[in-house]
Image (cartoon, rainbow, N blue to C red; front, side, top):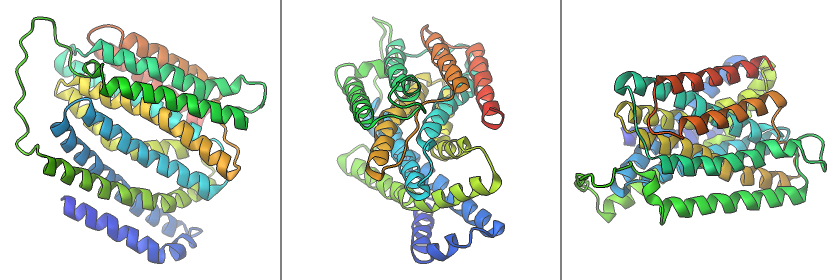
Length: 365
């Protein structure tokens, strides 16, 4: 399957490298545009599943939290590539970075968490996790999202939710530093926060090493992850051109572009998280979901602001008032959901309702 997936992905890269200019020049024909979009969407999504598969293989060999960290970073690289492609191609997408980050937060922290907790609650009634890990994620997510998506609306230097050059540089540095400190905590002295909680005195069954856990196997899967990731990055510009054209032609809300990018990027990871919850591995699901949000904001903010500074584009990060209210509600609910041991169907239903409210606001702001 991996060989076929790679062959299709790289054949698509080659086809667009040779014929892409002509194909993308005929987007005014609806059937051509729709066909190219379905083709690229399918190949990129299929390749993303390949990235997730190889990241999970590495996770089995490296253990937590390194496994989910590799997966979330790989997914965020895809997201940043897609956002950068749209921004540099369209030259008029000041809110795309904001819309994509907000879509990721809503899809992951409300959509995935809601569906996952409902399915897990129905199957296992009550699921446990490591409170320290969830608390660490939220401690990073709250300031990262507030700095990126709320504070720009209340600065007096600019009136429209954008930032001055000095603010952009300062906020980028602060975001990178905070995310870097979080990574040091996650992979260093507090890595146990991100593994299943064990009561003191409990005898833990030692997990047998993976039968194919040598350095050669790790390097092989790392190489396959890279060659699965590259086609997505290379095809992102073509998909971005079609996406931008389609949204304008259909008169669709501009925020829909961010939702589509977030859906492409996080569908495979979301499926992995739901599978983990159904296997009663809530800690792994939390690492995937909250880790995805932390990495997305921690890496997308500096990337988007850097593109804006280099290209001279205006970047709007501040959310609309209704969206700020939904974000604040999401953060508050997440603190409540992940502040006590054990989750049930109720928490999942509440998060899912907030997600549906977010979808409603996209089409009827």
